[in-house]
Length: 404
Image 1 (cartoon, one colour):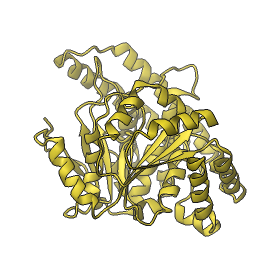
Image 2 (tube, one colour):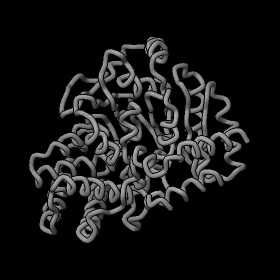
Image 3 (tube, rainbow, N blue to C red):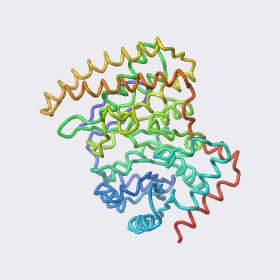
Image 4 (spheres, rainbow, N blue to C red):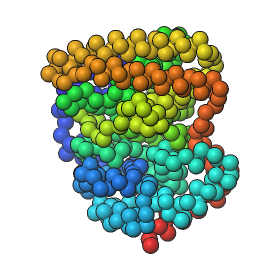
């Protein structure tokens, strides 16, 4: 049972669990006649070898309101691409696959790089989402776009309906919807959000002072979730981070390009389980430490672009405040775990905070030397201005790969 509490600067749409999927689907099918909905799936080939992807495909077979599905496939050979095509053929309706490792798409990535878009060389989910958005926007009939990860173990088709609903309903005026959910198994999950992102954002508010952008970030119940939906006009102006900062950069671009009153978050699942990232202090270039570093760099860069000045003294204050806030929040999560009969290892939580504080120290040192960091992937409008024929080339590349 969701609560109805509204806090922060954006609208929160909770799920009271009193509506059947059949009732929701009926309304979605009616709205599909007026607004074409496209699902964007960024995937690694390895995810097609997991039960999670099998379940996602099984659920998508029963979705009746989609205009099309666009799948961005990374780290796949030609044979593996053909395997994925066969699996996706089980889903009724149009499914287009971007074979990112194929000759056609590789040539397009080289062309973009030659045109001066340097970040295109950084492979990962961000680049995959960016290229899929570019492809979706070549279709003038596509209106709303939803994105979700491909490692959701307990995926249900109702998640997709709830993502789309606020941005396609004719009586609502939202341009962007962020999905949120609980991350609870035998213990509390979501360490990057609980122990890093939230205390960092609140520490920055303590040090920087009143700031609309930070208040906005703090309004999201799960800012790092990979599930969101938006309308095409907003997607056209979006820049995308090629790093782990994808989710935060997306929220930041939305903040810059639309009104706060046209942004909402929706409870799309009672609970959510997906693969866990590694949390190890030995390697900062993988798992959660890598994610945390990219997120911090993204937030620092955006604040700096708004006129916030970061010095060594400022970062010292941020890190000190972060550690203080994180340790205090551990006490809260300990109490929450106890009353719910969950496992809770205070020592491991404190160890995580230590790792995160060390990541912040490294990021702050690097930021002082280089304020700009890794550039975001440019908006689709910008790419079309530089490469006016890219639209036709992209459509032809995807068509050729999918028809072979």
